[in-house]
Image 1 (cartoon, rainbow, N blue to C red):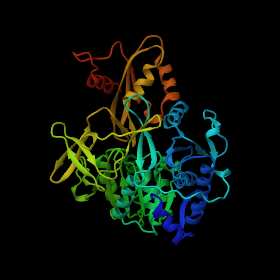
Image 2: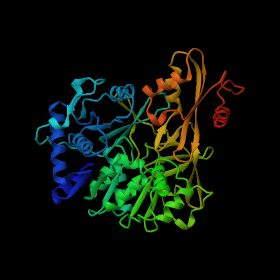
Image 3: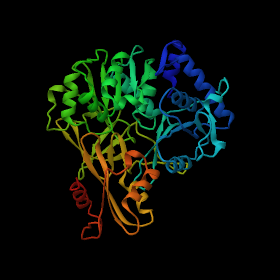
Image 4: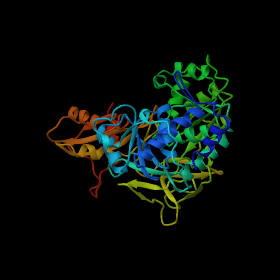
Length: 476
């Protein structure tokens, strides 16, 4: 179901350009042929419809081939972040109970080699056709979990298709569009690139990784490739506005920019809007469980440096409800995820009234929704979701640690950064930092650490996270 719009364009325009990665190009017809060979290879291995298949590839052409191959086989893809430490990758593969892992070359040492399938080794065969419904599982995206381990969010064909259709209509995607792609496939932002863009017959251009660290070269690349649209995180766009030399690189082909994943500092957005006066800007909002539940087409004349921008109006088909006492945003609709994945089983997450409680504190002002932070402890770091409990679990499991607490410290470039306070007995702070490198991804590494004799606590004995934050913020 999810790939049907893409398949339509494969039939109508097989020679049209689908993917560009550096000097590598792939047409719609060739992309379909490669994906079909992967699907046939999975079926030969005995992978059945609905079963999870991991994708051990960085974003790019090969990853698209693998993902579409999984879907053509009727299976469900589990994209892996190759920058994650090996124990975390092994946990995800085990928790998802994947029936195969797709990649290139030899299997990584940490993986059971019997699960490995080299996509380049798949023969040119056509897979058996498989029927998929709106409820069929399409993807499991693992995010940081509040239980101390990564947690898989399950997306159905219908949920992703609903978002892709809505987003494509919103920005009027056409087959002549050239869309930049910088989002790893384990982010829900990638569903726009894969299914809205390729579902409209447009071309997807993968942003070279090195350019995200060189904004002037990035803006030059956007101009040279005549990019017409891009969906990315605010921190990268703010960097582009600040150091991208946009006054000398006006980007006349750039029709729209969409941003999501963290709060866009309004002064940086004002700067970007001024330097790209003809580019439409959209703020998308929503946790992975809802993909996008709110959106705001940026109105330049309403941007005030000392005010956060609205998250706007209901997106896709979402119904929104604000809890009367807490102001928590509840969401329901066809684009909502099916639930969480735990040890190979789907666990629904809707409350007793059929809503998904987001944990976000929101208000409705003059017909527009506004975001006021999280009710819980979850952080947003450069677009990544980080649960402090996962870092705390890793630290508390180390010998020589008596206690620890993780809080978020505001960072104008990244939204928030995790910071760590800990009580040590027979280990050094340097040893803790070294061990954490092996256990959690780089975006979860604490930006600040302090050692204290005791963690501050409330009268009821619980940790006083506000006081922990004050101690960490005092450290310069």
